[in-house]
Length: 67
Image 1 (cartoon, rainbow, N blue to C red):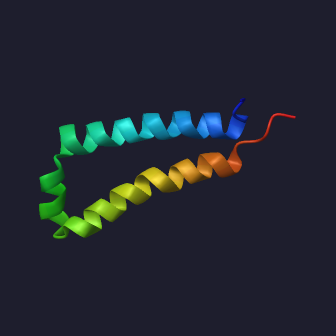
Image 2: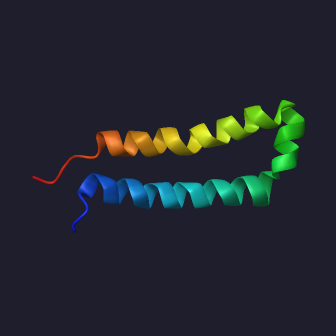
């Protein structure tokens, strides 16, 4: 079964963007530092999830189908 072009590009973007954010949050910024700065575990967690899903959705939305 062939996957369409939109799903391929979205999956590649999701994996790369998620890996970059994991490296950035766990390696460089330290998650606990972000929690201390913003004061809420839930706020940081939701923000990080939105930083992954919203750009992924945008890539899916704006990728053109191969004609």
